Image 1: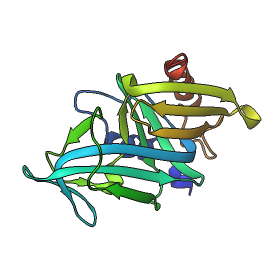
Image 2 (image 1 turned 60 degrees about the vertical axis):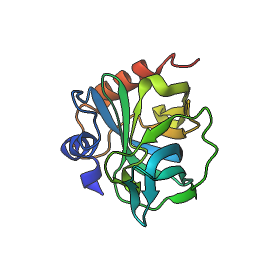
Image 3 (image 1 turned 90 degrees about the vertical axis):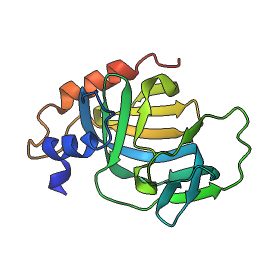
Length: 185
């Protein structure tokens, strides 16, 4: 578990999902208390492990959720928020292969997308609301709702774990809190 509290591991994990041309400005170890990702994909078909592009394919609505506490890395770039699991876990998936897509943002599938990669990177501009509250022992509770209905309940701990593997935790946590403060209030 101590490898979770390692800034190099965090940078590598988050780096896999940072949009091209952006850099990680701040990243920390945090806890997800609940996550619910909602997306609609077009011109694709669903396989056992993901979505495959198909010019003649239909639309697939996906909800990916987890309702238990788990370790994550949480980071921000110039225009995105990135969330990755520290250790692979299971999610609840719900699909609708014939969604009512009127008025919805449909992401066209251009290359195969694995379900585990969905819900890792979001534009900061798509945050509808973000509420921050004081938590236990100096932690900060973070409640994020996206414009597409995705939502996250996160806990940003005051300390970056034991062993000194995350020496920039306090500085990065404050940068994340400052960036999220005032969004959608």
